[in-house]
Length: 395
Image 1: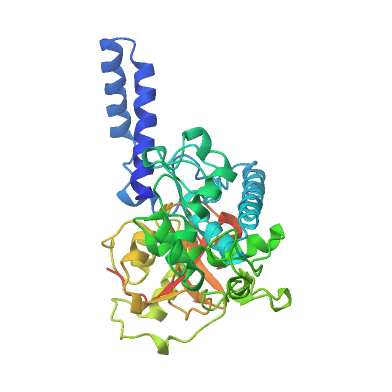
Image 2: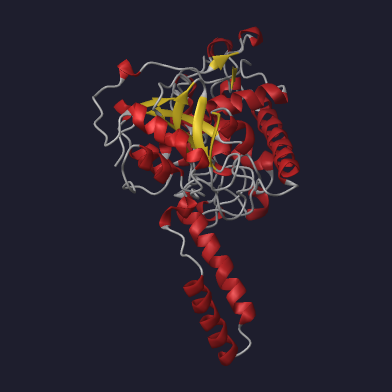
């Protein structure tokens, strides 16, 4: 429930430490091992701080950026997707048992997608675990209890151990879903929950979950009037395509179409113009330079800059002024920077929009290289969540 980047670094460091302990068979062996590492470091290139910008690392990151060189990558992705469908159904089952409306399910799914990528993780920041990354130390339950999806979902809806649940949040049924999720979770990245709405609506449709289901705002025993007023509200995802036949405002991932840049709130003066940046980005498909995990560096270089103040795409998105952002909008103008969340506060991804539904992106077709691909490939291949686009205002 705190910063996920810190969590990953801590977990990776912990893993290295454990391996180091296993190798300690004596002082001499330890020294030799250390010297060996130094020699390797001298012979191999040192990765920059941006090495984790676009591809997730650490425990549980496979679905966000699968290893495209692995023959089993697609099977792993399908297995994780099935787990997400199963957990989504469990969360909805609990919501229905509590007589909560479809919007409660939507908020819980958005929350779990951000916190755990809708996986029942046995690790996280500090002692955070489970679908909602609840902490035994914070009295959300014992470790064994929190690892039970039904228990965790019930806690999210009803609260536990002095922690507020969804139904304890004032006027939750009329507030934006991401705002309600943050009121329960108290995350260090409150802006990220809203970015999952489009994806979880599509997942709910696939799982046969009715997000338009009526219910009560406080759980069991509410009035008939309350039942009538607390059903699903229209999607807050700007610019997403909607399945009109479903009757429940269900959104799909949809395609990207060109928008106009006349809505940009301020003139942008970059070293390269939009046209020059797009031409340069296109030219990198055959340049031979490796951009592995360097998506933010790539778009910054496209506009004529070096490194940005941030070295993770998700941080650049969060650092960009709200008036420069278009959350969820699938009509970016050519030259815009498009952002995706890779789940659970990880590094994220950014690409430059070329127009015609295409982006120039690293790592999507070939690890380390730039290819021109449909913008929808980031969601389809990596299972990432589209956050929106911003004006190309970089450092």
